[in-house]
Length: 297
Image 1 (cartoon, rainbow, N blue to C red):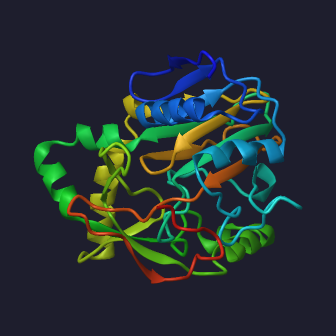
Image 2 (cartoon, one colour):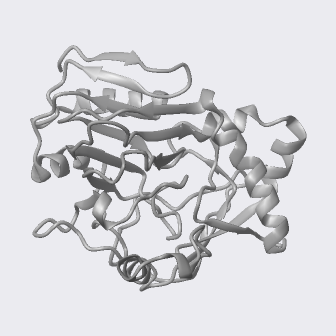
């Protein structure tokens, strides 16, 4: 057990971790301490890490079984559990929680900086438990009752006529298997019991409501997630790793670096099936993700 130092970055989300070498196997006490810190701070930043793809995967495995890189998007060559988050392959400049369109989205994500632009390219990470606590009581009572359908096949913000051939191919790949899953809008975290808003960009429709009505309610709830007070704005440096709890955060990669090279590698940890406040589990409507992820106990 090393002397781990945890330094908060903001009041509501994020902490820097020092005093632990994550390139080496962690003992059980250290791994448990990092899990406790993740439960509390939702996102942990490790500086000056000496990791390659194999090392990043080994670190992520301390938190559970790994998923493959993505249900539909290709992995890094020779590393089926590693997703290249590369500016040349598209930009995730929308708020989302990773892969919520499948039945059991990842419980945690790791991002490691490979190529950092000289300016811009920050990743925003929002605390959706703080967002839930911020809701006025009548809105919270409403959210507690709602279920939302998440899908990877939705009406993107950029219309088809405004995208080029390469972007069209990327979009076709992303939706090559169409997934639809119903999740509770308020998810109970399995380790802490905290309630968080489980929505984001893949949540497209509220059960029982029209698309237009759904959009208004989702936008209203989302506005609490993206309050500045609930957000960590992380400016990347070389050789950093960020670990975040995918069950109770959303994130957004800002496209503000003038098209310069930006590359991160992502490794995610298999998650459990989300549960709402009444104990009801999410359920799949379309798409089988068993090739992508096991279900965490």
